[in-house]
Image 1 (cartoon, helix red, strand yellow):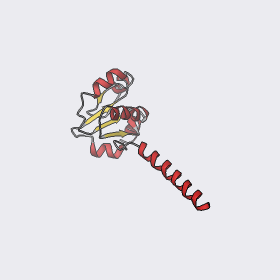
Image 2: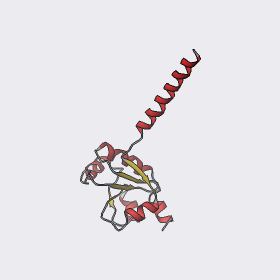
Image 3: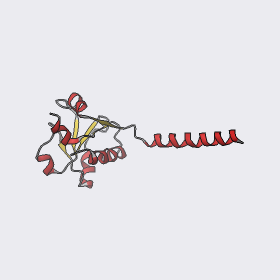
Image 4: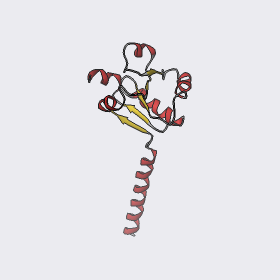
Length: 127
């Protein structure tokens, strides 16, 4: 009886852990400032600033395009102009909006999504 209970509890725990892991996205990768500097800046990549136009106009990472996440219908139309087979790099002010945007890109069929979790505020602090 004790062994059956242990086995049952072990299986339940294992199923719980594996179901949590399967919900994690393999298409979205969180990246930091050094990654952006090394892999993105100065390269021909799809770099998207998801902040508002006012935020973007007050400063942005070189060569970033501005697709305003707050205008969701337009945002989806804009991201669908990107190449889904190439990596897309996203950032916002501090990381919340870009994380949300990454999930939208994944839902739209993008498979190589990089989310700069520190955002533009981190970029400015670490220049």
